[in-house]
Image (cartoon, rainbow, N blue to C red; front, side, top):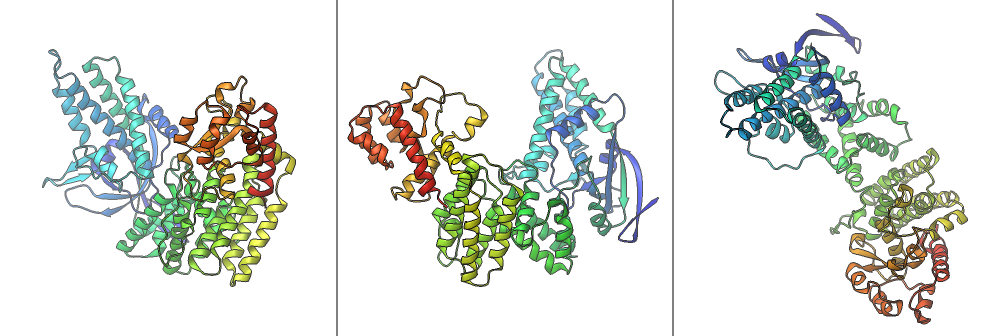
Length: 606
């Protein structure tokens, strides 16, 4: 028996060395609601495969920290896992793949005259006993209980009726881990005889089961909450989101049912934030940006301490902070989504995402890959949806200012957002949130506009970058060229001119439009620098019109261009009146320069 201290109190601890086989034969495990989701990456899975499965001897796998959450007579106790659930989960995933591989051998070679499938079948059954067990009354228990349906349905009981629940981020990671091991095991048995495959699978299973851990046992759940904040898993620091989850569940209530409710609310919040995002830091970044949209900006490493102080007054403060995050998560889920669409307006409810112009700006920032303004977006949405102090036109204008700034600053000139840019948005967000009158709102917006205007890049640099835009979908381009010649970006640029001239309404789905090369691409003889690909030779059409016009001469295209709501700028209009069949290089260059001037003077003007 050893002891550790936390908050000046002694926490009784005992520890015992076990193999994974001992763990899965002698214990039942539960992943408590304050735990992090399953998150091992391919790199960590590869380490597991190399260090554990390919090990020539017993491998020390680290520690697990637990407390007994349910005791049973004549059967295994349930241990709730504070630390080590990633290791145990990965071991279970690996064993499930071995189980299915044994079954596959039995089925695949069943018809061979000299092959007895019974040993493979029996090994599959034996492996399954490390995943599901029965007591003396025939009641079945999962050896490791997790909340994800996929874990029970695929890993532990593949005969279960599928729930058809959409996989969240944790479930997707479990699925990726299983696919990783399937590929490794398929490669490991490839080319072996059926009996050889069975023997190889037994070695893989044996190495997984021989791995040793130190199982540390605490006395209570409360000790577990405290210890959780100080532990890491296999060299991976606890993320801010893991610590905040633990903090809210522990501090939000002392009742088990209420804590489960908080855990479920947190899970829904995380699903909304993660959406299809793959960056493992996405939730931490969201929490940081949400905080900085409401309060004086904090550095991310210092944030957990500040959050702890914020909620220190009691359960109500914990739940209020959870509500803050839920509010901003509803906005965050649509940020950096190039396919974001206008939401339906509901009578009596102010919803920024029901404003087509606002949504167009959100989509534009996603296309530019700009996230530095998220704190400002959070604040604007909240001010509009929670008060009547900000007008609809002001909501649209703020986002248009931000869009115009980053079109020039980020999309055109590839300038990198600095700490100063982020601080500017954070200060505006806090100022807007604290505004008590319509006048204060107006003053804050005017100040933001001025600061953005004063930070615009050099006009000559922006002009050159715009006039150099091109669209060459059939060419192999460098990464740098691809960033500013993607179809959705060029469609956005051309659409912006048409919207300014009121030829098309806001809220268009860019995916339904096509880019027309006025002088056909078939006329291009050079690489990406050929004038045929230049912005000066491009216009926007519906996909159907684009396919009809094809390689027709300009004189035949004009009617179609007008039907397609193309923006007839003065240069393009002059091509029409001059009755030319194809614009010259000089005419294309002149139009590119005109569009660059128009872009900076009117479309993206600040």
